[in-house]
Length: 305
Image 1: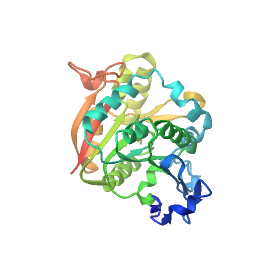
Image 2: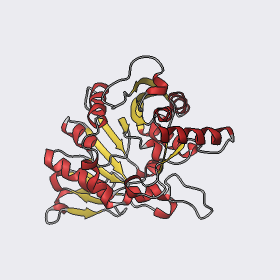
Image 3: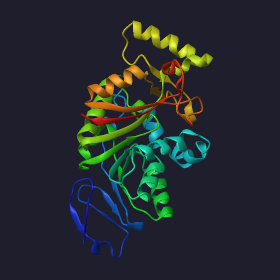
Image 4: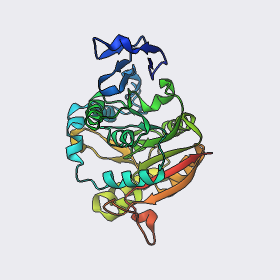
């Protein structure tokens, strides 16, 4: 029996693993057989990910890089979000959208709540995240549930370089899309995801709603600044400053309107199948008038083509 490196495709006989838990692939990936799953640590050039010397931000800003690579963020992640009702509701929605097992990739999988859930349901799951600390937690969850998945340490903004093959479904949850800086970079990412999917494949993702900021004072201050920047045609006018979030200096996140996110996914080559407007506590769908202003974010399912 042979196992294939999910990064470069090279195959290894399982007898290589007889006296050690992992084998280093020639491409730099670590193949780990503990509890039957593979961890692929794809090599990365960290200098290409952070702010450039000219001061312009790359797809992953320096603050986002700090967030992703901080061990305390990963170690405390599940405790910090243990009462976040979105984390159970989005799983319910995904279960409805994905009734049958298939090949699934979770882009920005974090500590693996969806990786472990769908692996336990019988899906062939690949989880990708830049944080090796997050992937370590995911690995423990898979072991606890006695199921397997392919875990890849890699950069989402260069997902096409990872050689992961084709998938029926892609997930990009909890505003991971908004962590990519720059409209061009977000569009390139979505088009790269489209290239990963089979014909009529499904992309399911979550983003924050910028107009929800209307309902609290600090949010209205943000919107006033953002609208002035938009009128002045400044790039990334709706980048939201969350400086100090979980101890990360100059952290920020791009937030969308319902109209913008529909336009963006259409331009990326998708058609929106369903859009769930989240209620205030994010444990159900919002009903009634002016949902685009009131929603506390969106869950979106879209198809290729």
